[in-house]
Image 1: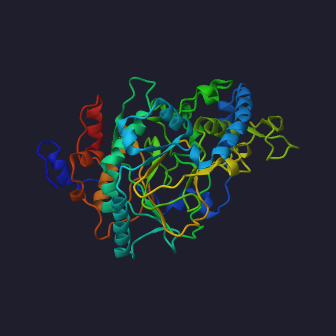
Image 2 (image 1 turned 90 degrees about the vertical axis):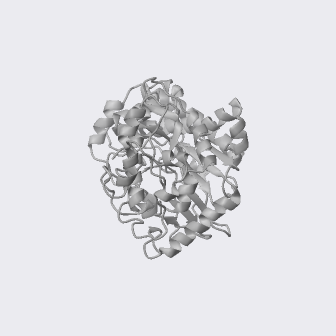
Image 3 (image 1 turned 60 degrees about the vertical axis):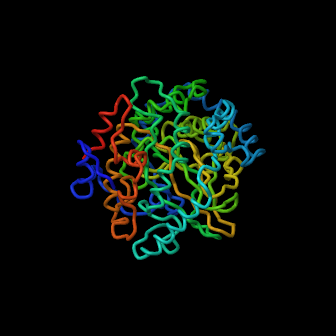
Length: 475
């Protein structure tokens, strides 16, 4: 690639040889490392210190909050069940470019998910998939993933196709739009919601008939950290204020999220950056029932329920599955945070979260074509269908929408260094990764000025905190 002159010119020359990542590598593993549903392990009880945490957070007014949330969950579930997958907003990329109506934007924010069709030509997306399959076949002796004897979720991050997809103009424009749905309540917040950066993730090529890659309902980005880390807890401060304040919860306020810690336990697969939207880009034609994504499309209400749930339990003689608010009472003497395990992701389960009625409220993404994009809010409960009942592969590249912050730029630096060495990204299972792979992506594949910026090969300009960001990017 072209080496620029000036203070950043030396950066490119040093990257592959002198630079070292500042983050300690994670343990080796796969996507199964963070999901009890993939390992079938029993949930370990939380330490007694979590009793005190509950008591510190508790307010008597949370009783009212709990009652109000439960009263609204029933009708919300009824609506979702009646509408099915059609409840998920679906927009054309060309309409997104020309501007969506206020009603459509509000529906996206209410549901917490969106499908964007078009943008990436189908033949281009299919070429990405074929090139990845060829890349995996050429390096079959080194490829790791889940399940180990029939890999369908690949620990591959540095292929040339992934670089092309992450820097594709249609994806970047879509991400700019999605980031624009967020705002800052604190004017001094150092974040650019108009500057997406690349957060490397893996890929999935799920085979027909598979029933092993079954991710139950869950929320990524930490588990007990939502209550344990004061800054992350502040993101849900309205919910925990009690009374009717939960109704004022703003899931699109970026300010308290910038410095929140989602990973207190150095867990493989736990995201340490502010990632407002998780997402994937389809590499196949996939419909409901063919091993696709499922979501619970009631963002704020379900979030309020999850945040309040640890403070209440079924009464002694009541059924744990009872939906009657009268059958539930405060729980301030047990360390239980249902569905949460240290070092794992937060899971939602029918027997632990009965009011969500997950069998009725989780809906599958409607049919997508190669090149279509799907995104969901970082707090949204989502899952993967338990079985792929189709006849073709169900394939995606996981590509989220991530904004520029100082912390995110620091991560981008280490991600860039690992990429040039062929190692996994810092948040993901460690080990040699693609170090010995032939044909992996390199700096020479980062060709445009925009791509170099998105991947951290160029300094950022035109933002107030550019000096801090660019300092974080340097070796």
